[in-house]
Image 1: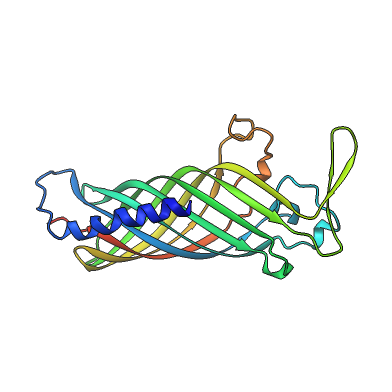
Image 2: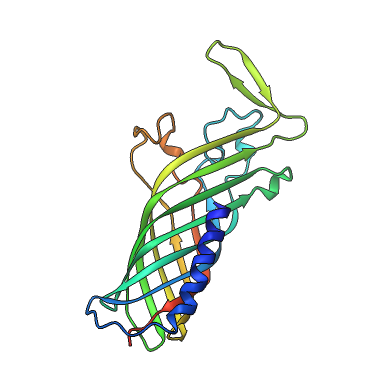
Length: 237
């Protein structure tokens, strides 16, 4: 995921620079293009602490584990502008929620990406946006028990095995509605701010998610605030 974000950043830089020299298009449909990077922060939570760490048989009192926490991350998007009011494109992000209250390195990391479509209008240099992304991703969950604790797993043969940590990876499909604002610095650069909330989508019985319960779909989840910079041909000449 980190390599993909670096490659995306290298693609976006020449995109923004070349936009300044790009001639105006006479197409009634195509009205511009843009791309950029965003950082984000938010608060994620689950309805039960056991859902935070997924399909693991946690030793100790599960109810004493945290069921939420703050997350942070980054990502980027590429967009084509149509009819001077519609963005279509793709985006990808990675977000980490360190379980700092546990003081032992436990964390939940989520990576996701997909196709986006949104509607925007213009109030001078301010562009309100409302849209949605659809796609897929995976959540990686690392649980490290206390020094005197362990993760107990019961095998199919009935044996109990103790581990000093638990790691699991659960895939998911998602719908990601969002609202935001773009504030144009000029015709080729804008500050973007937006809020979203990843929602589960799909069936737990699909091939991609076999042996994964519905509780692991984008769980934990919650609102995220994104702030970033977009480059490109943001305004039709």
